[in-house]
Image (cartoon, rainbow, N blue to C red):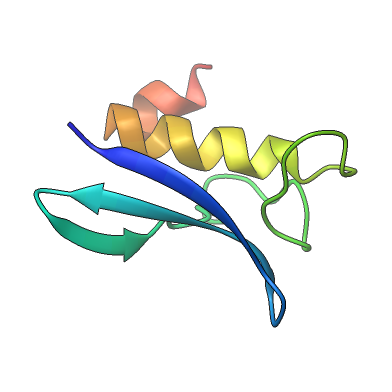
Amino acid sequence: MNFYQGKRREQDGYAVIVEEDGRLRSLDPRFDLRRHSSAGFAWGFAGSGPAPLSLALAADVLGDDDQVHSI
C-alpha cells in the first residue's frame, strides 16, 4: 500500500510525497496524460490545481494509463 502526503514548499509550491515499500518519491504530475494547469498541484479551491493533482493520484494508484484515460 502506498501512502501519500501533501506538502507546501516555499520554493516551488505544492508537492506530494509517496511512500512506497519504505521508500520516498515525488508524485509524478503526469503532464504527459493531460496538462490541466502549468502551475502544478494544489488542493482546496486554488484555481485549476486540484485537477492535475487528482489525475496524478489516479494514475499512480491505478498504474494503468489506459484506465486513467477512461475516467
